[in-house]
Amino acid sequence: IIAEVESVAAAIGSPLAPYTLLRLRALQGREADAARTIPRAIEQAESEGQGLAAAWAHWAAAVLYNGLARYEQATSAAKRAVSFTMNPWMSMWAMPELVEAAARAGDLEVARDALDRLSGSTRPCGNDAALGIEARCRALLSDGTTADDLYREAIDRLTRTSLRPELGR
Image (cartoon, one colour):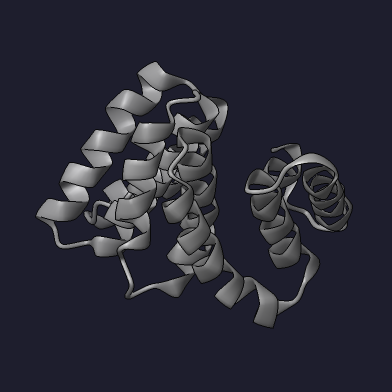
């Protein structure tokens, strides 16, 4: 898919943000590869006024840094991704990264605020994907049996979706 996107972009003479490559590198946790791809995508997006592409790259950075247990960097990247308010879809996907990063970094105020903002989208949506991600985020801010119950709810709900990366997390 990545090669096809690059081929089409070259053929039409229009550089496209490497959305698929960014997501793949972030999920793989390959810091060396991602460290080249993400900053380059951010620089290109910002120089061309492509706010969505920049937000996507910051989201990828948040995913990468959460996976590498570098929570302060993940928090910073996630905050940048959710600040792009012109596309609520991006906030829906970046907000769980902010909840996780802030919770694990010990910034509970930021984590709770992000969870409140996230639930504003997930509750009305009401499907297993949205509610499963929300349950996982709530578990991060809970303790003991409450956290365990929420993680089990997240697994149960996400099992019924095609979101395998989210289920794995």
